[in-house]
Image (cartoon, helix red, strand yellow):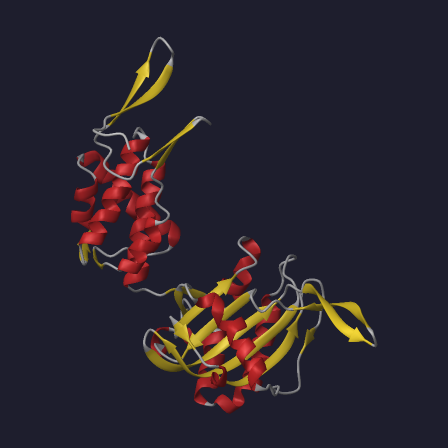
Length: 343
């Protein structure tokens, strides 16, 4: 959980970053701005509210971490917060250079210095990078003599942050502890914020490793051939149950619990290698289980069997008392369910 008070905002610099591909301008401000406490309170809500359930990352570079521009500029800010404006200009220029996808919108770019934020029970300073791209129309009603008038204004909805990043002054040697979101874009154009501008990767911790293990299981179940849907549901239910009951997991034991047949276990191990290569991740042979990651990934597990457009079977318990068959007279498949009591 991330916490900060309105007084946490020490400095804020704002620039306008356009789309370089469309030859829109990069408009740099002349200095940091002054803001009063009521505005600070709104800004804290606007900047931090979207990060309640955000994933953790680290800034990254393949050869040398100092070659990551955002990391290098953040280091300068943490070493000398009074130089925030100078580094905000560098950050804005770096963002502008990455704004070359035709769907990227222009918008205001905020660089903010937070004092004494709380993250993972640690009190640290943070640098916030935010971009507002979408504007909304608001009605302004005001008295005029003995009557009222209505005007419209374009503004920013403080409940909808478009893009954001919080860089916390901890784990410096690993690329700082980072939270990042892009609420507008999900496709190719989203890469410019998360990948091209920030260049981040998931934090390699228990949460990340447990999540990768669960994701790998789901992708295996989704594509494994010649396995009935109820058996696929059972495999994922076993995976969730096993991880909930164990603090530490060895991959071989995990595979043995999920899959009884040797051929299936072999396919599972091969799928792990493929998954790691395709996702550019490593799933260790021994994992300390994150309960939070299990809860998060368990929500994605599908325990429903859809039958044509008429029925759905939701499986909350064991699949032991569900049988699948085929009726040659009706030329249709069927499920047979055994139970003790109808409720």
